Image (tube, rainbow over all chains, first blue to last red):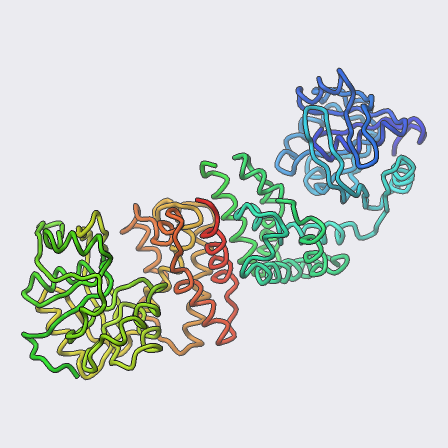
Length: 301
Length: 301
């Protein structure tokens, strides 16, 4: 349980990527004490001129604390854990000696991984936001910005503080169902966009792609069902929708491959495949796409 | 039925690629009358200096007839039809007015397609040979060189003529089973080698590839079984073997993609997928690989 009043809560965002910078910036703009932990080039830009946040309605330099040292998390009440899946275990392990016992961790989509390392209260969170880093210490907001978080003794308080700070946050008894709903959309798009380097709108117009996506959704839903997950919403409709609302977008996996970086595929199609193996549900497509993306990660760009 | 004696048979090879040039060259070397139909750059090289055939035991300039005009097929007794699957229908249609009624067509792996266009006797043939064009009118033989052909009233005669000319040829009642055995190996390797641009030996060492190949073989065997085909030999063992015997090889599909050419994927994984649809056998992997290769055909190389 957190020790400070809601007005005095100290927030720390670990991971100064686009999602972390956006939520940290919005919280600081609402008057909260926020410290961003990130790489030196972002930290020094933020220390010099504040976090530059560009949205469709305003552009502001927002003052907040920033550090590249995990030691700066020692007095945090609420940690927003926003690092990539591939770095989550390592970062959580490094953070462990610096965390106070009462800190509550809000984990963006990797609660399971963090719980495997930290004894703290870890609240799973699903993020719905489109943001991108457009320079050192400069984040651009393209749309949405809501959270769904799991229930816990602190969840209602945190949700009300976040919502008051212009981050609409819902507490859900089925955050795993919301996570899977998002995961399934990512499984349908990320790897295919990566292998073909096509944006979503053009991708779905290619021969065979609608059937592949349908078969991927079927595999994912079968695994979710075997794992006892009630997937929120209509996954087929969600998949169709993204091609329209995000037609120009290529996946983060596509961007990682184009930059020769390791992708998060092990936490997307790879996760579904591992869960399928665990529950003895066949996942040939999720496995194939995972394997192909991993082979392409290694190829010269 | 052919009208000439076995000594006087006139052979025409349509398609002066590596396979057609090899078999045409070997037949001419054994004293047969052979005409090669091919592209002008090969034809003029062959007219000037003969077909240059390099094997592991000899290198010879072999004299044979060559033409870039399909009209030159008019007196053929036996046609070896060796054009790519993607060009088969178009070439057979163009050949039709020039063919004598008695001509017998030996089709390298596309008898079904040719039968859809020509009323002639079409004998299916499966080719086991490793050859490559290394220059205009210059073919290199890397290994093997056998045929399995379907049974017909002319098959035993043709097989004995070919075998006497150093093209070991077997007549089989189950040539479709031999075709599928080769098709399945191609389905396991061609698309994966194309997407990753990896040679077979390194391909099978990549994470996830043995499982993908196993699942592809399972899909193919299920389709074959539903289609009433008895696949010859042990497909799993054949797939494993190729990684060893052809470790340095990349697939023809990989080469087509690297050159920005249309591949034969519709006649490999795409064929299995269509047969699967026809017989209501799920083929998600064959379909996905077909679709991915087709999207990559269109990408800038």
